Image 1: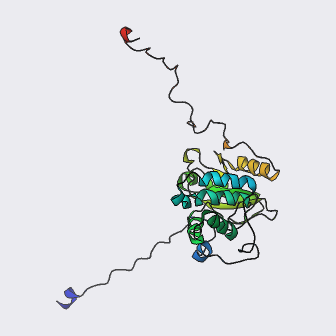
Image 2: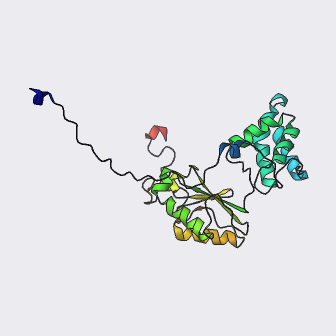
Image 3: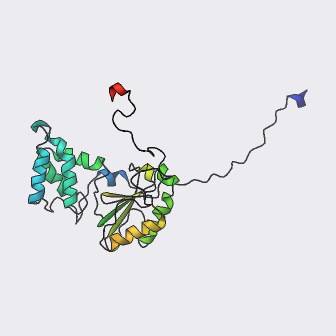
Length: 248
């Protein structure tokens, strides 16, 4: 009976090889880089900053929108205004100036500037290129668009700035133009329905100091169906056209 009670070990199975692909190609940023300020020659509190007269007028208009006890709510639009004046990035001097203007502790402004990714805490190029690689854009070819951008700009890596200072390229999450994927944002404008060829033309135009027409690059109007018009194809009826005679 001994041989009947003997247990046998199951044959070992070899685990299949798994190919992993990174979700993003951007270089990793440590948390201290994202949330901790360290003085540098180009970013320290000793570098002066203040709004131009025109921007100061704009800032006062923004602050006036809020009750005096809630004027700290203006920190978001004021930081945006400061970043635009400061060549596209938010330095520690910009943050301190906004805090002083709003009469709030600087930490309240630091919290805003480090939370929202719209605030660039390092200098950027003249043209800020944000390539969306979230699922809808990825399914429509955003990987090719990202590779086209980096290669066409001299083989720079995501997160880098070109040597001439004209372009900075980053990879971002959804920018809300999924129906027009793939797309990129350059400064304040969206460029949609992209192909590698149209992407190159857009970059070349910015390199020449021009501003190409934003929006879909495929010829369609805004977000209309790429397959053509499928509804509202007939003349719309006028008021009371299909009502009973007594109501016409």
